[in-house]
Every structure is written in C-alpha cells, then in structure tokens.
Image 1 (tube, rainbow, N blue to C red):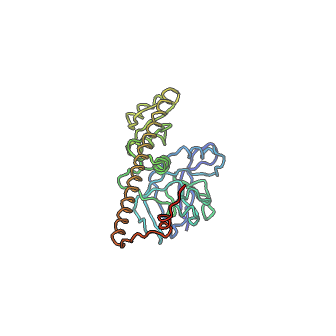
Image 2: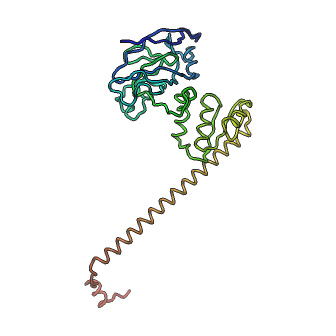
Length: 302
C-alpha cells in the first residue's frame, strides 16, 4: 500500500515552493524507508526548480543531500535496522545487472534513476528530499557515521563526494602535494577542508578578494590568488607545477631504486643457482676435437 507523504514542490518555472501532498511506494523487500531530518540545498536544485536546464518535469520536489533515520526495512535488508541514521544521495536506482553497475559505477548506468525529476521502475516520477520521508532501495542507502553531525554532514552526499572523488582518483591524498581550488563556493570550501585533512598545500583561486580571510583564516588554505591577477596566478601555477614535478621525480627515483633492487636480487639468485649447479654436476674432461688435432699437426701458412 502506498504511503502518504508531504513535501515542498515547485509547479512552474517560477521555482516557488509550496506545500505538496503525494505518495511514496510501499516498502518492498529490498527497500528502506527513511524519515528525513535534514536535506542540503544544492545549486542544481535551484537550476532544476526554474527549469534552467530545460528538462524539469513539474510538479517537482528537489533535494538530494538527505540525512534521516530508518523507520522500516524490507525482508531482504540486513545492513540496516529501524532507528539507524542514514544518508541518501542523488542516485536511488539503476539496473544493477550491467557491467557498469557490477563495477559500482551506477552513475554511468543507462537506466540510472535520480532522486527527483526522474522516472522510477514503477513508472512514477521521483520526488526528492524537501519532504518528510522517502523509500529507497537498500543499495543506495548509506550508513551515516556516528561522529558526523546530521546537518553539517548532509552536503557531503553531493558537494563532498563531487570534490573528494577527483582528489582521490588523481592521487591527491599524500601530504606535501599541492591542490588548487577554483572558487570558494559550496564545493570549493569542502575541497579546501578535505585537502587540508590529507595534509596538502592548498591554494584557493577566486574572483573575489573578500573571500581571502575565509579561505586562509577560517578554512586553513595556505595561499589565496585572485584570478584577475595574471602575474600572481602564473607564479602560483608554476609553483604548483614545480611541486608536481618534484613529486613525480621523487616517485620516479623511488621506482628506479626499487627496480634496481629487484634486478640485483635476481642476479644474486642466478649466481647462487649457477654455483649450486657447479657443485652438483660432475666436472667434464676436456677433449680436443679431431679438427683441432689436425690443425696442430698440419699448420696453415698464410
């Protein structure tokens, strides 16, 4: 049986939100029902509300940075229990059978389902987190760390993973590396905090001089550069490139040292093997060939 729900929806490109009563599906065997406590505001929500991307389906309830607690679980759900604090991000469904899904890359699945402005498996439009509850397949529900505040942690489900993913993918997790953050907005300020948590040197590049204090004093960035100052921007870019080159050189030297060590080890093993063989094998007598005997007795004069 469908579950009654309440949210705040926009009904036209004005983007104005108003009360909206609707239904969520019944909690299935693989589903988790979540009572929503907090939901972040992402700029993509605002774009979609006003149909600035041209594909909004009204009425629409935005919101994709959800934190709440579990109120019901299906019979096949074992990772979650009623009362658990959980998070739900922008993706709530995929085919879960294709090669892409099997690699945990559901965001590339052609049958991916967004938390709002999308069509669910049952053909009904999805509605987001500006509401009181939601039903989600267990695969797309996340355990929320106990030491992370619900309100402050909610944006990590979109802005956080958006900046963490490339930082992790490109190996920017080693202390001493230099990270450049373009813009100190919703994503930028989280990128600075994650970068500093990894021990990186962080440079913020911004169009606004007013953000320098926030970047340096509040968030802990090491340097601040105005994008309108080409000289300083060039100098900082060269500094970052030099740091990357130094890191690459150090990595290359370490790799060469490791390879040299492996070669030396193999040569040593080969030498030991030959010595062992020489001990085990009987020594052969040296016999002169008939050809050599002939040459000794019949020298050739040139």
